[in-house]
Amino acid sequence: MTKHDIVLSVDKLRKTFVKPFTGKKVEAVRGVSFEVRRGDIFGFLGPNGAGKTTTIKMLTGLIFPTSGRATILGQDVPSSEAMGKVGFLPENPYVYPYLTPREFVSMCGRLNGMGGKHLAREVERVIERVGIAYAMDRRVGALSKGMLQRTGFAAAIVHSPELLILDEPMSGLDPVGRKEVRDLIVEEARLGRTVFFSSHILSDVELLCDHVTILRRGEVVAGGAMKDLLGAGVRRSEVTLIDVPEAALAELSPLAHSAQRHGNSLVLDVQGDDAVKIVLERALAAGIRVESLVPKRETLEDIFVRKAL
Ligand SMILES: Nc1ncnc2c1ncn2[C@@H]1O[C@H](COP(=O)(O)OP(=O)(O)O)[C@@H](O)[C@H]1O
Ligand SMILES: [Mg+2]
Image (cartoon, rainbow, N blue to C red):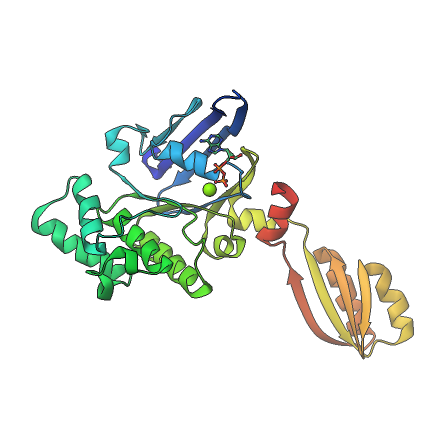
């Protein structure tokens, strides 16, 4: 892996806010480190108040870290080289209500050094891409929350950034709106962009991400490739057998973590692949019908509850 495969590198970032008047310190981010690779969809998770937005503000140059460092494609944040490669969708984007999506997205393009026919073409292209071409020239104040979110999304991608940073892009949207934003994220990643987004909606993250970092009270408590995280939990399987005679039940149930009868079926909760093999062998040898074998993996929610709360 070369240096340029790392699009975003965060090294021991720390942010301590000092409250006005009281002088009380709030350690919002406490030594957060992680790396985001090119082409990844990277989820930044944590309950409310964990420090996600504070970290994102440091990555987008809105606030300065108390200590630590972040680089984007090898350039220090917030240098203009680094920031020019970033598209940013803030949490609850604000758009002046008397502008139209076309005007707002054009303005964002101009702020990124675009202009002329190229800008006009790109503005139309990205607005079509996010699915609000029909509302391109309506006042933003008249748009729904979902359409406003998409206007913000279009503005974030108008200058074809290499890295997209999205703060809670799915929050406040209904399930359809959430799916549409998820689809946009996947499409952007397919086009070769790297996507870094924060969320507390775990199902969205589980569906989307290659890598995640879980934050709790300003610190990283878990992270890595999604498949490693989900694969690391103890493997359990649910084995369902039909018409198990009492004698066989006495033999099988000590092999299981739990055994429950439902009508004529017996559901065994079995830990580990070896135990599953023995249960199946004995059941088959006794002529018992095996209805199903369902492996149960740990979900992201299980990990989140175990680590982040
Ligand atoms: N400007 C600020 N001044 C003081 N405290 C702040 C400020 N911004 C955020 N915080 C505090 O920092 C912590 C992390 O907040 P935030 O980064 O918004 O979390 P998240 O985005 O994960 O919900 C919270 O305790 C919050 O109250
Ligand atoms: Mg936040």
